[in-house]
Length: 114
Image 1 (cartoon, rainbow, N blue to C red):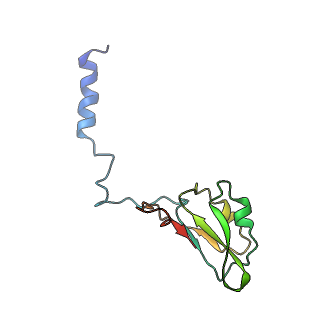
Image 2: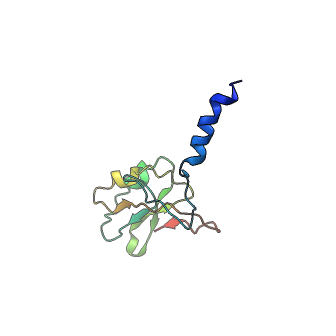
Image 3: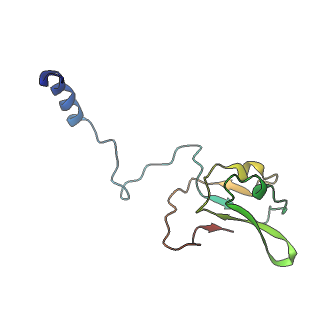
């Protein structure tokens, strides 16, 4: 056990420091560059190739039928690991990773990006 005399300066130093945390949700920090949050899908750019669904490691991206017999990706954020592989695989940049990270929801199915 260390002597109290050696610990006292460190304790005083911690007391005089600014807090490391913020009073969330009243105070918010800006997300860092490169944060991969909720994805944004641009259906007008999509060519229905299915590369995003094929390359998704968690199976969160699946292809679903839409009008006209075409298929479009659907992202289930309950399973998503936010790796960004779908956005990297898309040849037309139809998927973009945003900085939106507050994704809490109450009901199953609310966290689906179409």
